[in-house]
Image 1 (cartoon, rainbow, N blue to C red):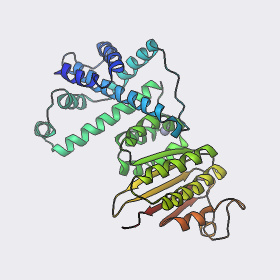
Image 2 (tube, rainbow, N blue to C red):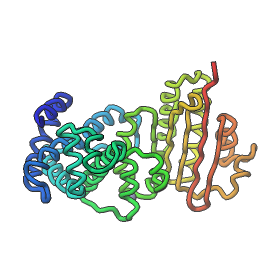
Image 3 (tube, protein in one colour):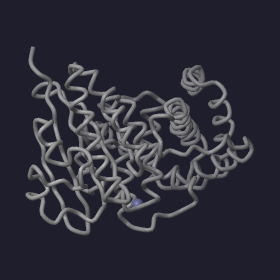
Image 4 (cartoon, rainbow, N blue to C red):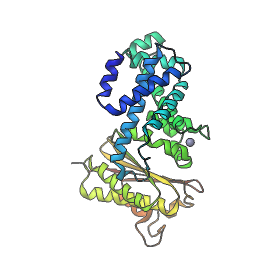
Length: 335
Ligand SMILES: [Zn+2]
């Protein structure tokens, strides 16, 4: 069974998988609290999957590097070093799972036990078991990354934020104010790249860190490419890209750091939502900043009033000394 699963996945990614599999067998020999027999195969499969999927993301990001300006990829690491680091990181990550979490994941991933029968055994529901499995996987990814960084978070907000990102749970991300934390915490900003890149494989969302003029160009191109897929006209694409330029240029001019998140919408009809967020000085008088003729930087561009005119929905929330969030939406024209 193990071999079948392993082989199925090895086929996808030969070199990396061989390496990881070999590494993890050794890791688990040394890991505390891992029962031989029962947990070893589980840990191999699960941790391998976690690691291998991360590597796939790295490959993908390398290909897409021109679109992700802020992502500095390390040079190809020495293989021995990588093995050693992976070994330690996986062992470390596994320690953060409870006995029950590991057993449930083992039964599901390794023995193919479905969530319904797991739920019967655990006195739970299939939905709750599935949700728990997702949370366990999300936590394992976070702990693995933290272990690779050789660090514990500085703040007790970091883990909840990273886990919310890792699980792709948007409601939870809002609850813990993940967007703001990423702008304020270097560690989480760094770790969010591989975690969010997973989410982006859904291909209906794009997140662009904004720090310099080059990022404005990336944001513009990114939103154009994404919005083109839901059927906007060429004119509308230009309009949307222009609005994105305006709000990202504001971030570069007035804030040290920020990001633009582009999300495709399906309901009530196709559209695109853009959230531009920064931790800059904030706008003391939002009403005035939205008034025509009031240019936030003299003579250049359209400013916020211009961006508002270009979009169907437009909202600014700003807090002095904390930052500004602009949310704007454009809907596809019917027919
Ligand atoms: Zn943090």
